[in-house]
Length: 266
Image (cartoon, rainbow, N blue to C red):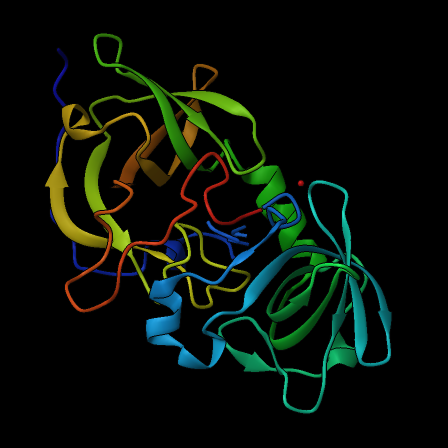
């Protein structure tokens, strides 16, 4: 079996080194953030009690009408997002903006109370990302960075298959320049992807060095690198095993870390 170096590094939020999306997950936040409605995680509730018991919608803004927005999810569903003066509307790294600043085509993540019958979410929080950033994430996924869920590992040939947030299966390779690090869920922890602009979800590097042999099918991964001989090869891969990503006292690991790594970015 080929050996690869493992290096120690300071604990920093991994996605600070990547373009921002979403999300969204881990939705990263890529092609428009990976879009779906899901319950806010217990971990998120522990850190952000004001969002406890709320649902989340991630997708692409298709209309802005005063204080209301329309968001299209990846399954084609359309949701109405209702905001009020009490809704926290943010962009980038938590910068406050107005609903009027949101544009059609932007990526979006909203948390609040969902009326499933009318597909209307009354938002307590809305996070926006520029359409240009969404496009950049989409265009660079699998070229300058990789993220997703490990579905197969070929140790003998130093390769693995990753189901990306846009549901594309991609085979990536490793060489002597690749290092592997253990990750954990960062703030909010609703998946491995930071929402647009690096909001309340992130995969953080713990500084623990591992090897390819430590990676398992089902793990969530993220890494930067480049295409070599037609195959993406990361220089560093951060790996998180579902259910083992939280520090003690930070709440249980969130559910829903399946083939749609909550949550980027279609």
